[in-house]
Image (cartoon, rainbow, N blue to C red; front, side):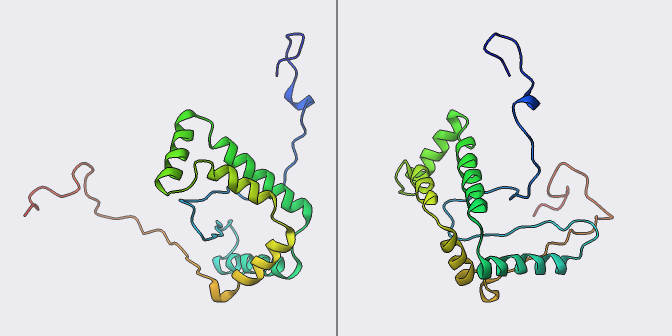
Length: 164
């Protein structure tokens, strides 16, 4: 980082890195009206155990709620992701075009952020209790396919001589 006198300041003298738990990403696709919880299973854990751990965490939020500090952290992360995703003119044009095609106001993202700032911890708890029960749950477990023993050579999607 440049100093006022033109020299450089060490970044570790200006900031403190603190390791915390956080969402790997916050995103939305075409203004979808669903929430997805995704997780990867760490070595040494069983798939069913991790699904149960996610369910238990959601049930805890529904029962006990979340703290104001956690809510503030999530809001800050969301605003940062919305800001940084518009780091180029092309990304800004894509955002505006997407809003226009969907019939949304051109400033829809800014409006969403403004509304997000008004979300309370009590609202998060109420939504978790209402929408995240087992009756609303869809769990998917993806298993990789075994490697093919007789793979086709790369190139053509259709083997030669099979065209009809």
